[in-house]
Each structure stands twice: as C-alpha cells, then as structure tokens.
Length: 269
Image 1 (cartoon, rainbow, N blue to C red):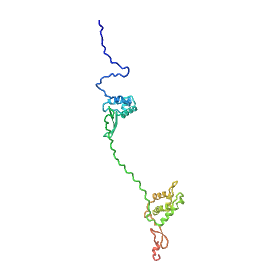
Image 2 (tube, rainbow, N blue to C red; image 1 turned 90 degrees about the vertical axis):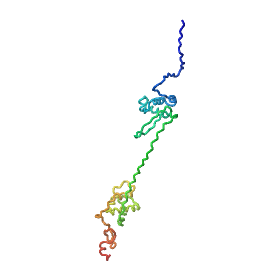
Image 3 (cartoon, rainbow, N blue to C red; image 1 turned 45 degrees about the vertical axis):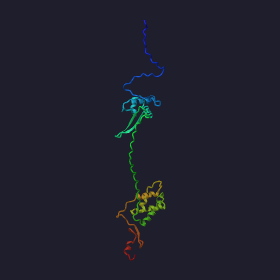
Image 4 (cartoon, one colour; image 1 turned 90 degrees about the horizontal axis):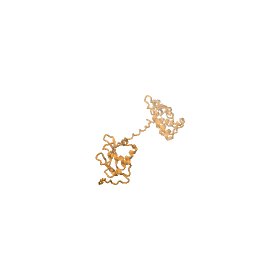
C-alpha cells in the first residue's frame, strides 16, 4: 500500500531576532501616521504618542493641558513639555485670538506633516493699538500772592523795618540779612495798614518756631502772607500819626499836612 504524501505549505523563514509584523487591513476608525513622526529621532516617545492621539481626534475636540491630563496618567508638566516639543518640531501650533465679544481663546492646529513641508497657517494679525491720549498733568498750584501795601506811609515803613531788624532780640534763631529786611518790610507794612499793632505782628512772627529753624526769612515770608489779618473796615480804621508841617505837632490824618489848630488860623501858619 502506497504511503499517502501530505503536502505542507512551506512557511516563510522567520528572522532569528527582530520584530515580526502581523498586520490586519484596517477598513474603519484608523489614522495614517507618517514615519517622519513615528520614527522621529529628536522627539520623546510621549510627544510622538501625544501627536498620534491628537491627530486621531475629530475636529473641534478639546486638547488643553488639563483635558489631556485627565485622559492620560502623565502629569500636566510632562504633557505641557510634550506639547512644546511638538510646537518646536512643527507638528503643532497654538495661537491666541480675540473673539468679537472680547474673549480671548487659544486656537490649536495639528499637522500630519511638519510645518517645514506645509504652508504655515497664517498667524492672526495683532489688533492695532488704540491711541488713548494721556490726560494732561494738572497745572501746579499757583503760589500764594504776596500782599502789597495799599499806601506805604513812611512811618509804617520805618516801624516795619525796625521791628524786623529787632526780631533776633526776641527770638535768637531768627537771623535776617539787610536784604531780607528790605524784602519783608512791605509785607509788614500791609499788617500795619490793616490795623495790626507791633506787638501782635511780633507775636505772629516769633511764636512756636520750628526747631531747628533752617530758613528764617522763608518762614517769616510765609507767616506774613498766610496769617495776614483781613482789611480793616472804615469803622475800625484809624488814621496814622502825622507831624504838622507848621508846628510839628503830632495828629492823626490819612496824609501829611497841617493840624486842626494851624488849619483854623491859616494866617499864623
């Protein structure tokens, strides 16, 4: 009896080592990945895998760092680093855009070819800066105007000059030069025109002096201006003392001239 010969199909010789591909033809739910990505020599496996996952998602899917960290066991820091790798090598771009309602969103584009071989998505033009005029700086406050005597009578000028020159006897820290006395005298004359007495003026200038007193002339000018009493009313206004041009008798009058007795006897005068 003849022995039946069973023919066995010859198997292809398998390599001793290395990977063996057992491929099944995909007909649905597949993504085509280029070897330039799958075999990239400079990116990490996490970046390559993350790019593969992103390209498999439908358009409009959210791929923020927090969203990816919820999907995969890697931390947000590692996922953020992988996204930066994909941006560096041209497989991902992220741009910020402002919506018509004013909100700012991040637009992400995934590329199945690196940007060096495809047309880069045009970057959105930044919104032109609106010119907002800077409001003008407020004008500095006008300095307080210095008072001026209405009619500087000679006796008022002499009294004011003597009072200012004698202040150091009442307050040793007040040291004035001749120029200081000349400049401050008209201010003191204004006090006398408004009915102030020498004692009241001296007290206003020497009371509660700061220690140390660095600039006595400036302090006196400030006090003579700020503490100036109001103008005297006609009811309280007192005419200054005058010396009669005939008998040299003292009398009160708004201007120099003759006393009442000399005016009553003009022939004798």
